[in-house]
Length: 309
Image (tube, rainbow, N blue to C red; front, side, top):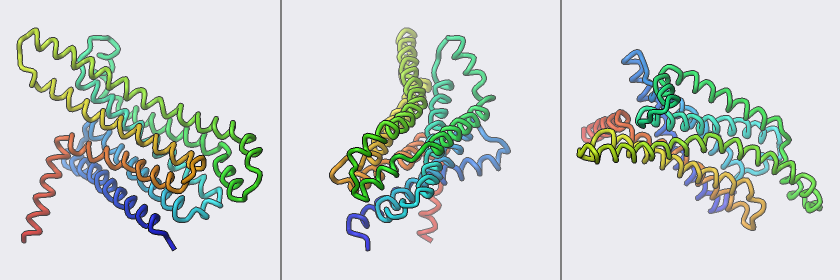
């Protein structure tokens, strides 16, 4: 029998899951239909479709893991079950982060203006190599998930020690360095795509500043398409970075829940906050992307017409 807190948690998590699934399925479906009609797909649509698929999988893993951890914790007595969930979570998590990073870099190369030879070289070739870049992200994510999957599950062993009320002080210091080395490795690897996105964001700011100075010299208005493109891309990147940092903060909260007095509440809060990242950012992408936004308006108009009829 679930408590009131458990029921509220399941309702909130399910609501976030449904919103996230609808948003990501919508992105994939719109781009897929456009691909069928035009017999080709643009680089940005290819990235967005890959990102949507990875986030659909990530959402499924997050809600499954959250409900099991809070409502059916005895399921994790089976270490193999937890290992399988960890493998798929690591894979989908890194895929989502890397694909979003590719999206940020793509917009930087398309919008920013720099005269550096390396930047110009990348700008000319981004459309031709984007498929290989995404395959590289898939390979890196798969490798990381395999490395973490083959490492001993110290968190599970530590939880068993607490549950059986053994002398956990001694056992904690025996396994603490091993467990924290695994967690440190995970965090360090996650820093790489985050750092790339941050660098892209700051380079975009530099490009916008240079562009505004040039506009002042040429005495033209500041509402030109290039300025609007810079500002729009910066808003999208800002929302991504904010949600990403919140997501990893929530993941750490759920990871270290056993150090807190209200450990179950910490897990609930962490899971609720974490699922905002794949759900919220996808909705922002729909709003910021002209094709997706226009398609959503048509869908809403069609739905309203059907309701009236």
